[in-house]
Image: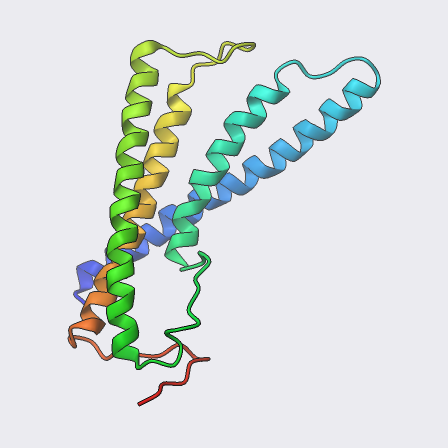
Length: 179
């Protein structure tokens, strides 16, 4: 059984990542309509001048706003052909090992995003046409990446508890162990 504070933090992480994912979905809709109106405008000789810049910013935001919730739901692509027939405990050990590597990579990405955001702020970087400051978007992306890191930490914690026998290791519904 996990500590009550862990459950509360997990719920908070779920809510934060869900709201960020919803914002990313709204960005996708905005990008779709912006592209539609830009194409229509180009047909009549009046394109939207900032459509490329806005699309670039929205696309970066969409990726990072959605990645935390995808990680929370364990929705990333996973090749498990070899481990599906192993026992639940062995699967938990392998999840712990791969989760550790994933967490390390996510921390490195988050760290570099924070460095980029601070650099964008310090240099007062602007987009070329609309001259919009880039640093607020970079900070949002870096913070959203931190939510991916926290989701990975919760998954790693769960896998560790199962791998080390603290909690009972459970197989997914569609798995069959070779014992």
